Image (cartoon, rainbow, N blue to C red; front, side, top):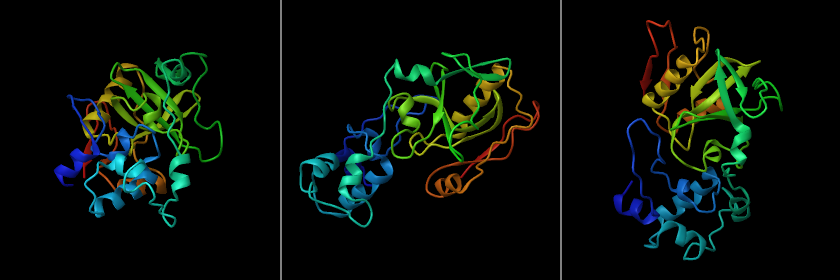
Length: 237
């Protein structure tokens, strides 16, 4: 992407070692928290026009304020689908602790079970830089990885499957945070420190949504946790 155009978006990023900061994606600094998938259509329109106005100014009050991409994403849909950002108190109900290899909600003490809720629901997680774990159901267009920490930095992010407190599957997946091999290794270290048995834990995408995501951005092709001696193995593609 053109450096000048990146600057016009208004993005400033300071990336620290082993920390996922906001990647160079326009929607991640949207003050209105609009759904990135929708916002991307308007960003593409801005990129291909001759306007020199910064993207968000162009979109909301400038030359692009009347642009309405009816076939891709109507303006009404763009404005209505906004990502929920949790405050400190709100995120407490999503905080999960791990003891003796089992996952449970810190606030209620209830064992975590991702089979609860609607069929085919997707459960997402983030591990904060202070090593607090947050888990919840993904709700397309309203509740995603960025919701837990209000778009703030994380050590790891992805999806998981837990049955009666026992981890069954976990893999890196976040269009917002774009987790790297190092980030996922941070999670693996966290799990091992809390006595989570990774021997039979699956760590690869299992549905079309994940496979589709992996084709449109940097991703990790996991090849299994293996034994304690073998450790975690991954390939960046």
